[in-house]
Image 1: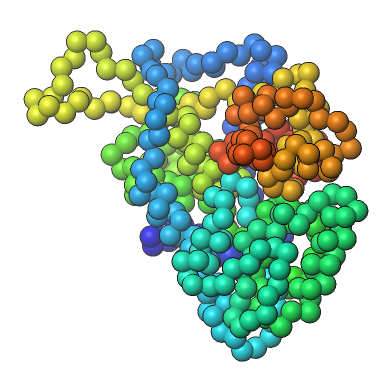
Image 2: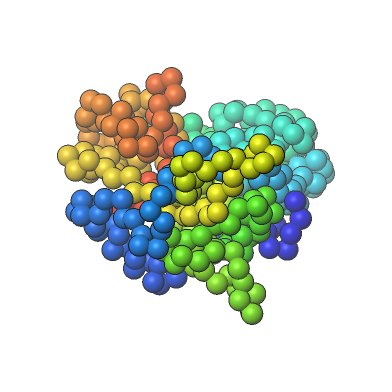
Length: 371
């Protein structure tokens, strides 16, 4: 997919331009969250919405959009890393590629496999020629003495390697390691995907969902039209980019979760050709945000924070990196509100819930990732 509206550069860590919502949208979001926490706001139905709307339960996003987004980001990785990885001459630096948790799991590993590059687990640095791709180093990260020693030993091995190495790392893991280890002395360059702004998101929607007219429940207006200066008139996509922290995967997922459509009137016949009558509007109204039960709110903050830093963990491993005892059933409780998944005993942040988890931790005053 080629478009001047989609970012193609990889941004050095520390220079990520976090998208910002319009001031009015931020104020409305804050007011809405206060009402939700006080249980004053139920469904928050806008007066601009038709009365006969229903939340669309199935996805509205075509596979072609997800495939094109993956291809585009593979092309971004190609542009910066592919020639470097395939050439064996020159120096042997260690690079890091930093990803938000809303990026699909193993994206870097899938790219490396597709390009025929060598992959390795985080604990090994085998000898060889060409670059070595380590898709995720989170399994080495533990906030205890043993974990600190293991990371120091790994960094020492990387520092003495005779081949190029590209480390895949979560933005939360990178922030933690930057503060507690020598990783920035060993890694000579750390980059991340550039953020998608409202114009880039609009390009995705126009290209792959052109048959759908999306309207904002907040303004009642279509979200895609531009003004005379080429700026998008409605603030919905700018607010969406901010909520998703610039990650297109998260933004499109949030858009999909906000879709409401008008219910066909009873007794309306299908079209003469047998196809069903098309809906006249597709409205976007954000669902009620996930809320932590008050009785487990504080301990949940620490658990969610640990999962972002360490990646998927068993309950036993979670207990080893937290300074408090976890209540029985905490993971199940967080799963019921849609924030975590349990895969064969390993607890992880649900990818689609990451924007909500980051918001929850930000409001709780916990330190956030920095990219």
